[in-house]
Image (cartoon, rainbow, N blue to C red; front, side, top):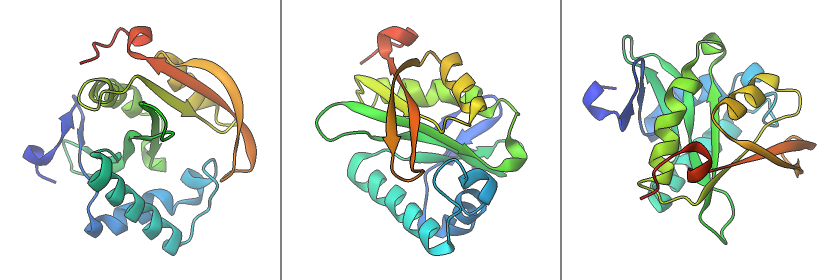
Length: 179
């Protein structure tokens, strides 16, 4: 993707928009058993294609996705980070991210998340963000807490079949300016 095509940019990453022709990138991300193990995977190619279609539909209906992330220096696909409607009854969005295995531990989520969160509270008008993680995914817990999310409760997550810790972030919690 050309740098001009990025929705948001950090020092090392550009935030793109999923396209139908990104199926290979989606397979490399959600088709990786190590990436998908805390999400209810591993996923078949057909399940990954369906996931990509949901991202495309979400963009068409709500102008949001779990946006694909690219390294600015190489154009390499890193993973995704974004928001989705959480529940239909209110302006709370679900925040999430998934990184390709080769990019774990590089600090990419902490770098790009403030831009994605700012976009959610600003352009999208979110009142709050919700996030959850598999209870065995300690790095995700640390990332969410470092971003200002606060633990609120445990909730059963059907895709994984486990009870997961859940978190909330408001614009006031994080010092974000809501527009």
